[in-house]
Length: 253
Image 1 (cartoon, one colour):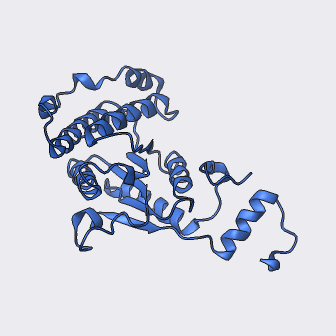
Image 2 (cartoon, rainbow, N blue to C red; image 1 turned 45 degrees about the horizontal axis):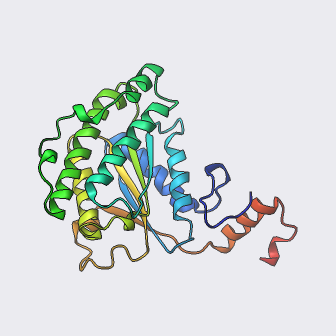
């Protein structure tokens, strides 16, 4: 294992963050029982390990205990608007279904030919005139596509649910970060109401929610927030051991 801060750690090389990982596992267990997996916001400064944690949690979803479909997605600041974000996210969902080893070959083949165009997305065909309409259109795309995928692929494959992992969500800020966070909250709350076990785990900068006046805001309250800080002494020793394989005198740390 060679440390490289510009790239996430591979799941099998991940070290530390055991309390956060156990909290995530417990959330998956809760979701399997209740059909409603909690959603997470992983917040912290650049280079603190947010992307690595998301990658590790994504791998955990595929463990035999959970059998949930992870959908990792890196949010680029070039997306432009919520509708384009929703379109690319749905494409990524289809790709993950087509590659999932836990999904039967027949269903994987169907997922490869899955085409969003046949889904009736209603108002998304309207002329887009304002940022708010971008948001509504993207919401309609995501709602109909996930509902269709749940019925056609997730349930027949006997998967327990879907978890979308959105890395660097702060890059999507049209019409505003607050509006995006609230739209996602409304979207995934609707999935739960419709008995679709679909949740979101996103990473963002430490101050992502700082412009929201009250913690009572739905956009804040909906997410279980995980704030990442520097490694503890114990985690640092574990990290050094993983790099150099042995540490002759742990007391030096």
